[in-house]
Image 1 (cartoon, rainbow, N blue to C red):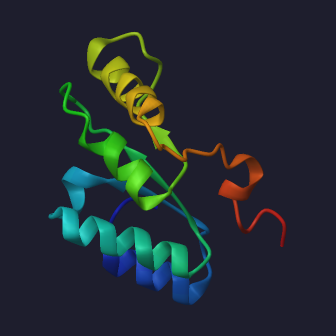
Image 2: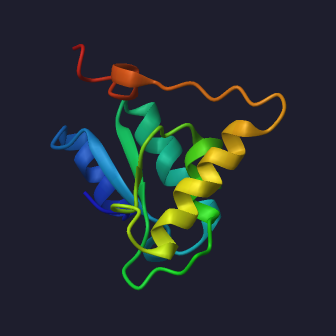
Length: 114
């Protein structure tokens, strides 16, 4: 499922999915994006934050992944500068003094153990 709150709510109600692909540029605002991620997490779903086609070197999604605790980002192989920029930003965030970044491993998939 891709970011659409109406479809998200329907899928939660119908129990037809367990993950949402978050595309910041598709949902509207950052506030709506955060609300969609929170709603998915409340339902026990995972969320993957994805870059968009024709992406730039803007690293906002790296911050969103960390802030929302999704544990997953979809940017593709770091073969192009706009993709590498996201991974480099994640490394810089992790290296900040006081950073408490933790690799979630299977805990990133709450429904996997059910």
